[in-house]
Image (cartoon, rainbow, N blue to C red; front, side, top):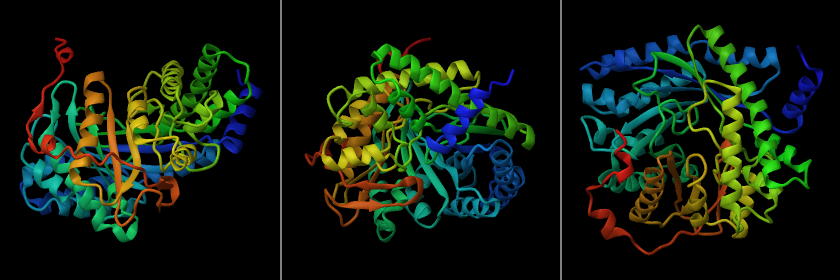
Length: 451
């Protein structure tokens, strides 16, 4: 039976509390496009993406009008391109330009999958692709890249960690006249999920169907608003309230995913129920934590509040959909969250505190702007620390750092749109160079032996 109150509540969430579907992401397998001739492979890739995703944007627009639900981004993720590069050889930049051309043709906001999975070592194509990332991201507008350098089963590939630290710095330098944006389109993972709809980390895993639609929801503003109405609730009552709110948000994502699947004639994959913030006022994970009772995000108690929030969101989400996947939890990107930006500017939030917070939430050190003179070895050290948290705890962690070339602590980079703006944050400048340059692999933890 249709409940009028529920309808009005949802309308209020959309109009006043920044509720939206952050993305509908079509995952497309390119395994059948592999060819020993790179030119033929690129031609097949372009044709397949343009055929499969031809109606992705128009379908999203249609669902928006039909249900009145904002869908902010329409995106495509593809099979990790390093796999195809290993078969064809040649310059991987050709794949990057092909993906960019396809993205422009179908009109999506981003296309992800310029990726390599190297947690246990490098196979054919991996090193060529990783070395090409700075050039690929600096020459394209819509392309996103990711590298999985660690997992709980495999340990941490420290050779990859060393290389990717240099590539992040190179990417920033190549786009220093454009707010170092190339580094903002590159994320380094531990335990990367194969069905993540969010950029920059989305790629289409090899165990996924040929084509699938995945949905990423938002909703920090809705959760903050709900919490603000009950200032006298105990913590367990707050957790219950967040759980119920997450249920409602996820149901909307489920509706959009099922409807998009029906209209496009492809399988529905997952709803990623991560709370994805924006720079808009009131749409902030940091503001949820402050509404719960912190003077400022980063204060003592922040990690505990975030752990409760993340757990409640997941519990509410899994009751709302049998197809929960991706990252699912609470994102804490600095530049994309108005509350995080403010906390970082005032010094309440540091990289070290953010690292502690990543032990209990989705992803990790996300969209953090650091001084432009930060060395590649320090960048690699930060990546290694974050990967260790993910490896030991059996969870996804990631790093998206942006060296602000020519800027120092206290300066700011302004990206615009969903990427927002980021204050340059202080990093520990004691060098881990000798550790990083040893290379090799940190072995998997003992508890990875579960068979």
